[in-house]
Length: 280
Image (cartoon, rainbow, N blue to C red; front, side, top):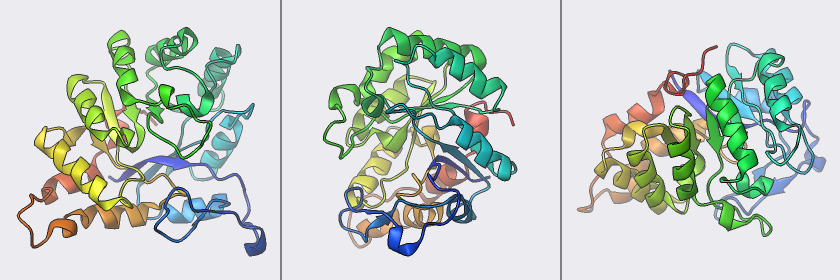
């Protein structure tokens, strides 16, 4: 079983004309521009190397992605697993959470405090965590940096989730992107808190950082807390699988330690749905 726990729903149902396509360079500055204006068809095609893919949007700037996510998941229910997103500052957030679960059939929650403009300790966010714990919904947090100028770093550090993990000990949480650039703090946190995991999405294109993160996680004995993810469309599952399997090429011919191959395959084949308690 290969599960991609981190893919973004495309904004377009149908393919965008080449002359209208939007490309981005800030995420992968040393690679060719990333096509961001992808379609549902392109997303699904990119998921071919995995058995299941979690897909979500982010509720920010007044947008509600939940109906689109549910509609897309219904087109390929054998492969796609939908997560909802809500803005904790919205007075109707709890009602939308319930609607997305009980009417739309979504299976988890995606939150991005720095994108959505809330502190992870905000009492309104705590109400969301409580409801998620009661319903058995895992939460995937973007608790990491961003190139966006207006995305506040004060909301972004993975250590902020320790207080949440202690307050909601049965709430499964995933820190996206290993909490980069604070991967060490993320490893400390997933070691301390049994209910906190991390995904490895969107790291391989910084090869030294990626290698160091995995070798440190191995040295701390926490590789079983890592989940596979791509961050599509910024990367694809196929590209991510290939690059994690090549992580040790960076240190070939040196005396530096290698990441054990069996632990790499363990990340790839980990049944994240089972780990997170997601029932389909």
